[in-house]
Length: 391
Image 1 (spheres, helix red, strand yellow):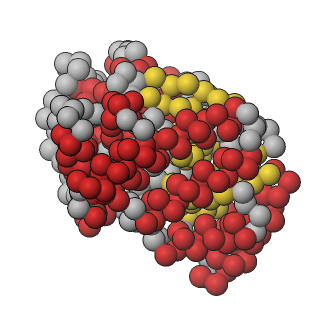
Image 2 (cartoon, rainbow, N blue to C red; image 1 turned 180 degrees about the vertical axis):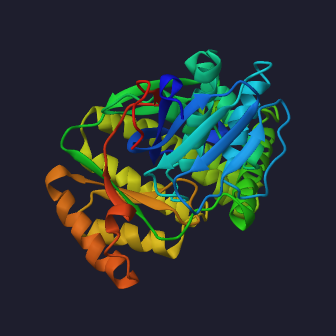
């Protein structure tokens, strides 16, 4: 790459602290960005061609032309996330030039930490920088949130919003319709630990089908409960929570919905109430209350939403036994990672216990640093100094 026009963009992964599987229901969430990130070293081209090389040899080179209608690569191909970003921008700006890019990441792949959305954001910032175009931050979050559906997953907008808008040292409540971020400082004596279950949280195949099925179930449950309450069918989840107490909503759901839909609905409305409670607990430095909310969230995701996995449940149990105040799966589930809260001084004990009791019996103790880490609340995505080396 020519040194005179070589740039590096960094887009962090994220850990969602609480508010799982409710962003696509329009309800608030509370994630934070990680220090681990996707980085792209790039330089602009004079044509629309885009060529990507991944430093990880598991991912083959990818090439496409930037346009309003980019053909997808086969399902599960990493290059589709780059295509998603390019197509979303091309639909907004005509005649964009492409880039040559080297991609690398220290984020665990398919671990529920949003490595895919980090790639979408990094790619978008690289193409925008190469073409000297800008989009206001909130607008870009929305644009890329919708754009990522190109890959076939009906997600919400949390990942793109926190990756672009995070503040160092803070978790952020993200509200939707309209989109906005409200930071809260993470107390200095709190330590969040992220641990991968060794089970890939894939966004393709059966997992994507199950994820999209949950989206449809939530929507159907919402419409039926709204109708039963005498509300319009298009009444949103936030509007339902304002219209009636949670207890009443759950009674109506129990009398109206099938067992499965009732449990899906119960997860959404109870998780929706846990987010402001967790935000308030963090602001008040109420360590015990935050931990209890993490535990309640995991139980709901496991039993009502049915997106946990035996290995996630095992990690949560071990973290709690080792002294964590609370723990839960984070991300879409079906594998992926957990997040656990402990005091800073207890973190080494929790990390050691997970290494000895979870990773060692599974033959993964040697690579534990790739699977488990302490999470530092970090800043959002940025284009770094020209010529900076990624890594």
